[in-house]
Length: 305
Ligand SMILES: Cc1cc2nc3c(=O)[nH]c(=O)nc-3n(C[C@H](O)[C@H](O)[C@H](O)COP(=O)(O)O)c2cc1C
Image (tube, rainbow, N blue to C red; front, side, top):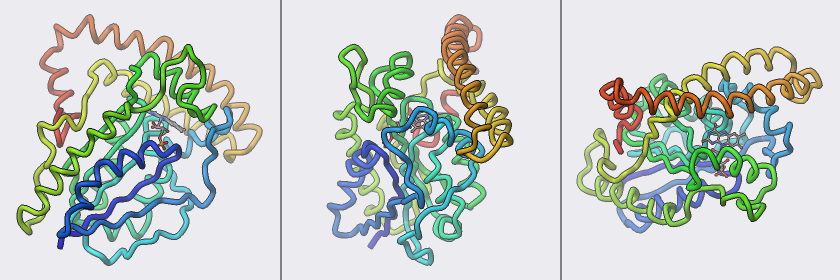
């Protein structure tokens, strides 16, 4: 009997729907047992988010400072043939519940020497978050064998408005003039193919999973126009998160005031750096074709596009 653990958290239910679609084929197999570990923050995050409350968690998220979770309903001594980590991206970083799980003693025990598949559902900027998560997995001695990343259907420019509006109003299409935020429901249903490939591999023999199982299935798409924006954004996030954390605890007035200044800066960054670097990338693409392809292949790993 193969043992699979799925670690998950979702605020709106989107990532949980995606995770369930991927896991359905595993659950149908009598020779695969699946345990689900739902992460529960000790202090739940609000949804919809209050405007300033959304940004108050920015420093701790970017600095990957773990926040208290309710006791984890899992036996850390259990050995799993595969662990699926379903996480969303917050501020170009793994969301706080997943970061907190990875810092737990249970995760250290569960993940050492274990094959891991990451499953991301986010707006569309996940490259830096996955780099940070990869570093954590390396430290824990886990082996990343596949990555699945599904992103919002409305496109980069529209999602800069549509996704925050979803977060602040709680509705995926709050106004007629904004495109619907979130991952296309048909894509969520089609994600079942990843579970089918995993089930096939797990039941093919009793050997440890060492190679990617999802090659050729379109598990990720790397938008080369966003690589530079993510790198620049991440560097700037590192500096600002340290500054803002130094101003005081999340609810303090000083942090609130610093955040307001930061939000103005962030908006300027979004309307200048993101389109500018995308345009520059496009113009320079012919000169750096080989390098872009190398970077794309790197970020698409281990599953590939
Ligand atoms: C505080 C916060 C920050 C976010 N930052 C990003 C981001 O940097 N990149 C991204 O692609 N999506 C970002 N998102 C969108 C989420 O990744 C995700 O799509 C959305 O929260 C729905 O996930 P859910 O399954 O938890 O409901 C952010 C969401 C929140 C709440």
